[in-house]
Length: 423
Image (cartoon, rainbow, N blue to C red; front, side):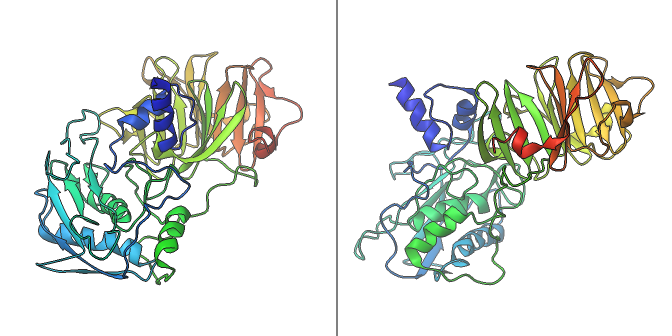
């Protein structure tokens, strides 16, 4: 029974359905989410749609965390996400009857789906942020169909990863109000968990789903653009960062990652980075798992973030100057077990950092040419604990470096797609 329940959760969040309560599943369970039950499909429809394209809505109550103007604009823009890709129109009415009633409520608000308030220590959010009801099954049933409710206890915000972003949650909930169900595809609007996005976009699954209900009418200059194509691991890929974490390899590209299980070399992904690590920026320069405590550090520009597993440590991001690095970004970070220290690479140079002392070792930086056979301006590096080699990535190629001979192994570089991506 327990294993089957875990499998159900894993399917909902697009995870491998093993039935084992692993760290990825625990991270998914802890994420705040929509209160609408899951229907599992590549893109899922609730079975109903509005019989007309011109819909009205009324904002019945407000949140105390935003001005009335801010809340109304966020709601208006959230509806526009769907009207920009379909013939749908949405008109606000100040009073009287409307197709979709929107309100902020607390606790048990008499619709059978009570809210839980803002209680989670790590996120500052509840687990149920909002919910919406599907469209009416016929023109005579309008009681609560399409209505959308938000938990008034949440800290609703705009244009910020802090609190809960009203615009992004509203886009998701209005998807339900229009007839869409949840999808287990990470990165979609209709994914069940709340994951803040710096630059939200229209995923192909969401677009196909809404257009299958209401037809296609794509407007110029949509409020959110279509998502960029997913990275293809077999088309001469280039990666921003590579690191080991709990026996798995993570290859980061833009806002996505590929994951390699080192026991069976199974490659999965691409999945959004924020699926595991919320609050990170869109571009990661480097990442590594600290040797002495297993915590993860991510670098982007002149800032770094610290995570305990998938949970962000409070007080971050912080400037990379905390490491004593005289640069505004790093190309790669390499924890090296033979020395117990971490190596940072930037352009033609590298620095050796003593994690326990919290300082750069004397005599650094040094030229990367000290590592015989390695290129400069690298993209990523990690040490493989299984075979005792360092792997360095640049562009579409990688180099294998011997820790005993202190030079690149003969026959390298090779193409990353062939050596790592199972292509």
